[in-house]
Structures are given as structure tokens and as C-alpha cells.
Image (cartoon, rainbow, N blue to C red; front, side, top):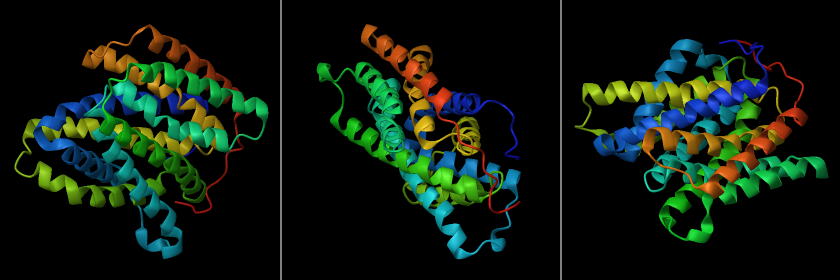
Length: 288
């Protein structure tokens, strides 16, 4: 898969976010059959098979030092997936994603280089608070903890993915990180899924794996070659809005008036960040 995709960077990010939330909604259907960890393992494993078939990596061409970053990305990806799926098993999809978004928001704030650019993460934070509605005090505390942990992993994922994207051509970096994530999730996932793998479960898992991680993580890797971490992190503010919409449409999780106001805030922040946050696209140091 070539990195020369001539669509605007924000388009890649938007399609990735939409794919993530559709994949999350579909994954919920697997929880009852194979559990949260089993769902994570199936998605990572099927995604890894798909990316290896696409990229056809030659693992022997890289040194152990070069492999460190994508292997670390695999570790972070596994933790992020397990925590996120556990969070959406306990919280509405939009609420979980709104809390998780604090990770990318932190990245956006840390890597902003002017006071003006700091306004957009601040506006996005206001939107996240409105969507989360913490003043109601009815959300699951373990769910919040898993969402926060997933947000920390998401922040690390953005930083490491940009590093990997700058050093590995195409999606070669993902062809290393996804198999690592599959192996790690297998430790907790296989015991849950064992004995429950029917044809229907596998077919749903194939669709879920294509929607998340295969499609979005590939697009995010390409987008991070063309956006700053601050712009990418704030663009991800659109993801809670998408999560609310998909939660309402597919899971009957209807948002309230405050959450709609939050959607407006994060959309404005996301658009503003995209207009001011481009970076010159870099060629990967390694070639395919």
C-alpha cells in the first residue's frame, strides 16, 4: 500500500475515525459470545493476517534496533484495544470515546507551539465535558478507568505511529506491530474465545477486524506523515461526535442536548486544527 494517497489529510483521518466507530459498534455484538478479550484477540489476529498479506514484509531486512519502535507500537496497540473494548462494555460508546479522547487532546496541547493553537484543544475539551456530562454522576467508575487507560495508550499510539510512519515505507510498520498486538492479546483472548468460535462469530470478527484495526490504523499512519501531532490529536476530537452518532443509530444510545452542544464544539476545534496543523510529508527512511 503506497503512502502516496493524494486525498486531503483530514479525509484520511475522518474515514479512519468512522471505520473505528463502526468497528467498535460491531465488536459489541461479539462480547456475549467470546468476551471482551476474545473479541480483541480475534480483531488483532485477523487484522494482522490482512496487513501481512497486503504488505508482505521481509522481517529479516530490519535490525533489532529498527524493530523496537514498531514492536512497542504493537504493545501499546494491544493495551489500547483491550482497555477500549472493556470501556465500551461498561459505558455508552459516545461517553467512552469522549473520555478516551483526553489522550489525543493531551498530545495536541503538548505539541502546540503557539497560544493560538492551544485554543483548539481547549475548545475540544469543553466539547468532551459536555458530551460526558460528569455532573450526572451515573457512569461506571471501572468504565471510566478503562477509558482513561485507553486514552493514555491512544496518546502514546499517536506519537509512536508518527515515528514509525516516518521510518518505514507504506504500511510496513503495521506489518510488524499488528502481529505483536495479536500475540499479546492472545494471552487473555484465547481462554475467553476457546470453544465459542462459530462461523457466524468468525464472519462478524472478519468485518470488525477490517473496520478496526486494518483500515483505520493504515490511514492514520499515512495521515500522520502529513499532519503535526497537535493537529492530528485535535482532529480526533471529531471521533466522540461520530461515536455519539453511531451509538444513536446502531445501539440506540440517544444523546442529550448538552452532548449535541459538545459535538458542535469538537467539530469547530477539529476543522480549525486541520487548517493550521500541516507538516511537510516525509519520505520513510526505509524503502519497501
